[in-house]
Amino acid sequence: MADLTNVTNTSGESYPSADTMTTSVTERDEATVLTVTGDVDLATASALETAIDATLGGKPKALVIDLIAVSFLASAGMAVLVGAHQRAGDTKIAIVADGPATSRQLKVTSLDQVFSMHTTLDEALASFPRG
Image 1 (cartoon, one colour):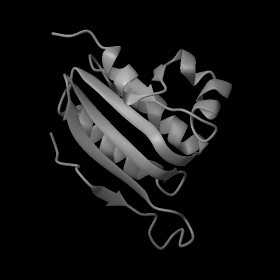
Image 2 (cartoon, helix red, strand yellow):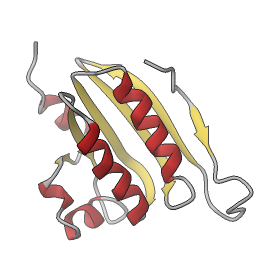
Image 3 (cartoon, helix red, strand yellow):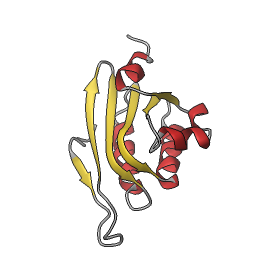
Image 4 (spheres, rainbow, N blue to C red):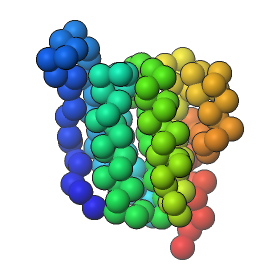
């Protein structure tokens, strides 16, 4: 699996006023956790997609995408999550989202019916079968 620990993805010169998004990957229990912070918008969605695809490339049994520290989730970010779900193969995906910046958008668009959504990382990790 590609080492994505503490990768910083910025919007670059195309969107000079856009905020920064960072991702990091850790192994916890029997799952791979991709933690995302900052804004996931048109400027940063492709970086999120790259991080998810690199993580899925390692063929983890379970992937938790932790969005608790995301301050803004645009439709471009939600499209990346849907694409990841479609490409996951045998990898089970859970999303950690809580609050108006993330979970509300996912619920309003009915993506909470597509993904296994949880309000905490521990809850998401507990949702996967052991062994």
